[in-house]
Amino acid sequence: MACPFFMPVAKLEDGAWPHPGRLPLGCGWSGHCTAPGHEGEVPPREALEELCNLGYAENCGRLPRERSWDAVRFAVSVEKQAEKRENGTEILANRIIQVEYACELQHRPKDHGKLEFDGQAMAWVRRHSDSRVQKMAECFLETYLSKRKLQLNGASS
Image (cartoon, rainbow, N blue to C red; front, side, top):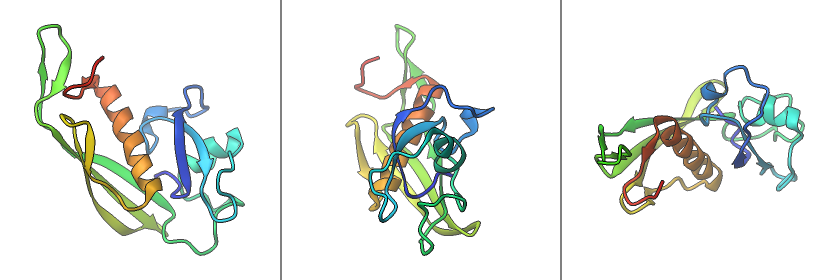
């Protein structure tokens, strides 16, 4: 569950997490804050590791008192089996990947839904209306696919 005010920008390869693969976006990310009054601020490394990438950041001085969500979760819900090309590269057999999201407030679901990515067209066909959640979904999917070592249709390796 990442902080809903966190805007991830780049993978943070050398974070201090014991199990970075278990992080909400699939790995650690650097980025900036979008909380009111703190837009564009780059949190210190400690905050990125302990608050931004994890959500429920009640100890964060940038977190607004009144907010819609405390954290955002993601999961891939639909992906067909991968097919292997002659060169051994795997591609997705179907073109649509569904990414489910859940926005939580006080450890309870507040909003949820499905986003869709078309791997053949290399475009999101169902996006989230909140640009922060959408960017997190993009980061989550990027990490998910790299862990699976899959190549989207039409993408070069």
